[in-house]
Image (tube, rainbow over all chains, first blue to last red; front, side, top):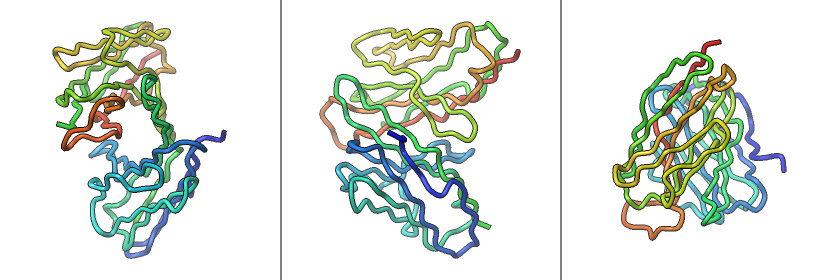
Length: 116
Length: 119
């Protein structure tokens, strides 16, 4: 398996524009997570899905952020309108809850978003 | 109760030395404690993990020590190498336990420790 695939790797956009980040989780994984990483706040969980259903979106900072998972192999994180303070690295991760073995989350390479 | 506190924020160690990173948690429902390693430009990757039924787990030069009563766990890197220079995150989650109000099955990460191993 190629691992968790995120696109684009880098995104530079102007304030006010819509930004869509994409994620393909590892096949067979039933959990998908969106994290945001900044120097100031570290790794923050934004939202996570179980079997394509959003379970906890309490980390989504504002209504400008939305996430969807239309099927088991694809998820999007959308920011509309984008603001400079949204600049960060956004990671998607997926996992298979293995019980005794724990729940290793596999991370993608991340999307570095810069809003100017 | 979901918070995981990590220290130190940064750590500089000489090659061959021991690196020690500490974490503390509040939620006693946590039953899975992994450490993730992140290199610049990459996503975090699982390094080693422990369940609360053991007090120590060792994999090569990496050891997790777990103190359930103190609600603390730590990562020890023996014979630290320049290639170990990275950011390390502790984390915690609930895998098998019953979810209570405010708990969830996702990983809660510490704030990270930037480790530099000098040659």
